[in-house]
Length: 456
Image (cartoon, rainbow, N blue to C red; front, side, top):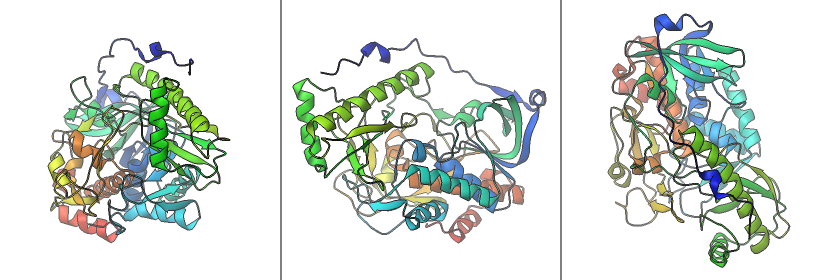
C-alpha cells in the first residue's frame, strides 16, 4: 500500500477573497511604458498564440504576453494530443486555419501522427510537445509578433468601460502595456474578470470539472489494450493496495519509442482560481501520478519495465471562470448540432464531463443526448467571445461564453485555436476599420476567416 500520500495536503486555508486590480488611464501613467500598439494578447497558450499570429498577419502591431517560458500553453505543457480537428465519427476535417497549419507542420516534420480516440471523441493529432513549442516560436516570429515571456498581467487599464491596456509584472518590476484592443486568452478570463465583465465564477454550488496531472512513462513494451487496463484498475483499487481516484483514463503511444503519455489522475473539488487550493492540487496531482505509474508497472502487461519519465509542467485545468457574453452557448446547441449566422468556428467534439466521480460523462453532437458519434458539428457564434459590458476586449480559448455542459464540448484544443484565430482577426480588422469589436461586420469577419483557411 502506498503510504507516501498525506490527506492533509489537500486541506487548504479559508478561500481567498477576490482581489480586483483595475487602474484608470491616469493612474496607469505612473508605470513605465514597456510597449504600445494595436493588439495586446494576454496568455500565450493555443488560443493566444493563434490570436497573435492572425492579428499580426492582418497588419496589426501585436504583442503576446505569456507568464511562462514557452508558447503553446496546456497543449505544450500538459497534453500531447490536440482533439477537435475532426468530429467524433467522421474523418472529414472541420478545423483549418492557423491551427491546422501548426498541426500539419508537425505531421510533415515527423513530429506528429494521427491517432484515434478510445471513446470515439474523434481523430486526434498526437505530437511531441517540444516540437510544438518550437513551431509556435517559428510562427510568431514569422508573423512579426512581439513575444513577451515571463510576464504576468497584474492589473487591467480602463478608460471608463473600455479596456485599453494591462500592467504586467516582469522580473524588473511592473510595466504598462497600452493597446487599442486586448485579447483575453488567459484561460481563466483574468482580463475580463479584472475589467468587471460578467462571468460564471467557480463556487461551491457550481460544478467545475476536476483537474488532471498528466505523466509520461518510458520503457513500455507491447501494452495491454485500454479495456484491460480499466479492468485491472478496478481490481487494483478494490484490493486496497492502490489509491486510484479515477477508474478509467488512457495511456497512449507517442512519437518516441517506448514512451507512453497518460491522462489518468483526477483532482476534484478544487476551485482553480484559489491559490491555496491550486497549490494543494499540484501536490496531490503528482502524488496520484506516482501511484498510477506504480499500478501500471505492477499490474499491467507491457509496463513491467516501465518508469516515470515526467509529470506535466503544471496540473491540467479544464474549467474555471467563463464569460457571460452576448450569447451563452448551451448544451441544447451542442447536442442539437445548431448552426449560427455569425459562427466563427465549428466543433464536433462530444460533451466530455469528468464530473468529479470515477468515470466520465460522454454525450455526442447531434444525438440529443442519446447515441454514439455522428460525425456532426455545431457552430460557435462570434457573440460567445464578446463581453456584454466591456469594450476593447475580446476573449479566446476555454473562457468563452458557454454553460458548464456546452463548455465540456467546446473547450477542445482545436476549437481554442479557432477562437484565437477569430479573436485576433477581429481585433485587427476592428482597428483598421476603426469600429468597436461588437460593431464589426460579422460577414466581413467570416469572409476573412474563410480566406485564411477556416472551415465554416
